Image (cartoon, rainbow over the protein chains, first blue to last red):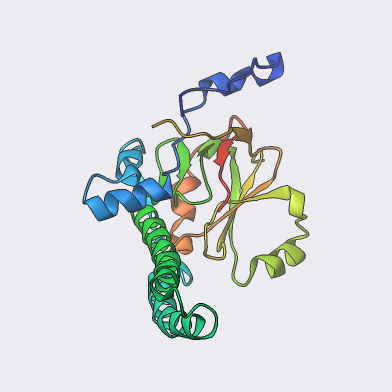
Length: 192
Length: 47
């Protein structure tokens, strides 16, 4: 992805956008997985180098993302008896094909979550001198000028409880967390 | 490799919801500057 500013011509009242920073890329998770297997430099590591220096806030140890890989490993263990049952009941003439398809499906899932975990570890949120660089590398990337941050709220419970409590509608927020439930809400607007 | 992605404004959406391992540590990091603009950009990608 290239560079600065939007790709279309800007209305005059949006000329401020040309001064915004380049938005960091998101890693392609399949390429991330391939790089892990080949022991090559990971796309997320390249993207992490584009993030500025500043306060770094890890996103890799959330309640959901922490169990992604073990969850898939347990699921793979379940695939073995499933594969045997499918072969026995449906396709006794092609046992290797069925075993291979079931194994490949499970391994693709495992590769995907390994890539997700790798991206989460490589790309923390970074608060630089003048902006918040959204990390995680799974759902979206972005740069929010610190000056645009009106306030921060910790979300103590679920997102839906918090939205009901604050009166936030579904079209009033952007969800930037990947698999973990968000626990931080950033309000954009002018501070008084 | 160039990624296919689109850019869109977060603003006028009012809230950005994200996960962080230690959310309580954030307030000191972001409340330092005087506001001048209210816009932000993001690159969406479906999970």
